[in-house]
Image (cartoon, rainbow, N blue to C red; front, side):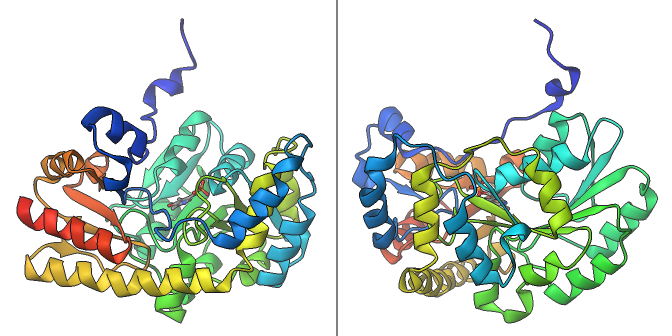
Length: 362
Ligand SMILES: *Cc1c(COP(=O)(O)O)cnc(C)c1O
């Protein structure tokens, strides 16, 4: 059967290998497996969230509140915006999909960094849009401006990942705001803040203020509950923007796109301040362990403002395969044509084991 031509150009997203697969393939026991491949929260699910899920399990027969009143209230309070400035997606991935469907098509293009979150490109190709990338691996706003000017009549969306996945670098908020002023108002600028809470904790200069973003005509901020908030399995993300952007995106949202339990979980975790603080503190304390290791072994890395660190290591594929046999799942960046391994910062014992095995393999 023949499918739409642009499907042939799509390389499917490569998710971190699931724990179940390692159990099946290598016969390793669940408790001996360390998964630090998908930037999930190593602290486990917030206890408060677990309680709320149990309390609401009996309502799974009912459709969720499609206005998402409680979660929007909680997010509005957090960011000092109104519920008309918010759209909720099944992960911020789904909001990216809405953005592409709202602003891109086979006659237009998107602009991204060379090495960045691959879903921007995948969704763009769903609609046959072209993808321009800046030449450097990491975000360079001069390059963004240059490529934008060259293809201005084609580019309808610019994606900035602040901080960037999978390399971990982070633009300053001031640079981003200045960049926004240089772009025409009919081009949508997407600030993907999936890890921005981590960056803010490390250095306040990196904090992108969603409220400020919502005051621009042509910019949207994306956030997710999958990383810091530890709800990757619940699939909740959001966009913050002015009412015009939100009302147009809302036309693309199918009803009941977020489950009842996911809405309850996301609303609850925003209240769990001790869980959030613990996650942030552990993350940067443990990050130092990796930085020290890299320096000792002359491994190149970029200072990370996220919950992962990327090591540039020559035989990354071989090392990742060998680690898998030991039950350690990391993210090989071969799919980005990089000899590099992205490691989610885990708990102390996990990190120690990872580094011990890595040392043996180097
Ligand atoms: C994880 C991630 C997302 C979205 O994750 P969801 O689970 O779909 O909310 C978006 N952007 C980046 C850069 C990410 O790393």
